[in-house]
Image 1 (cartoon, helix red, strand yellow):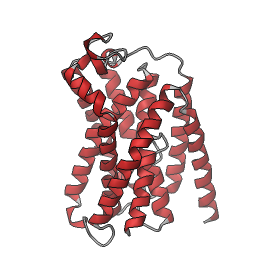
Image 2 (cartoon, rainbow, N blue to C red):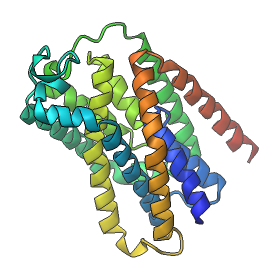
Image 3 (spheres, rainbow, N blue to C red):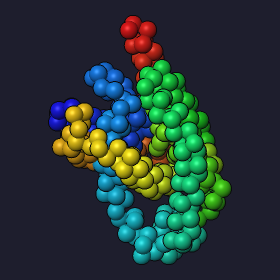
Image 4 (cartoon, one colour):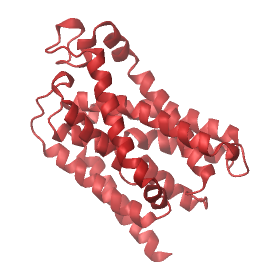
Length: 279
């Protein structure tokens, strides 16, 4: 993989990781079109490198809310007001417990089914079907009229369900942001808080998966398939573009316009099916 291709794929990752259209699905599609083996350890490592770039984007976009939260824990869990005057107190301990519970649920679902999820990366047909699932989730989310809970009122059981949605999103074509935000909103979490919680539980999930895959395939790093410079180029481009995509997601989610991305997912399903039929 040359540097320009790595940058292009990083841009694709940066845009689609946050916009609810499935980054893994798009990477599988373009890797297939470019003739790469999406199931190879080298490509898995490249994909994970670009995911690390998107984690950097999360930290950049949410740097002020996170700093504010460290000073006043209630500020991230209440009605949106700054400092300790928010509607309900959310302690740092409780938030950490929610994040841990969500990611334990993710791991409990993904680890036993890891081979199934990995094999799915090699099937554009499966990706197309999962895009349709994502589109339906987004459409249902926009139909949800009231979401009364803030993070302080969002229970551990609900956090576990969001974590399970994150686990299902390992399937290419299922958007991680789309699935987690949709499930959180359908469970009653305010739309803006749903985006925040989705990003917060995504950081340890992405970094953990990167660490596991890197340790497991250390010898392939810098091999013939994907060089270390290419992986870094992909990660950096994903981070830069991801900042803009995340800002857009925050606006679209709060305005209940996710269904438009759902229509895009349906279009990707149709386009992928046509591509498979003509091959």
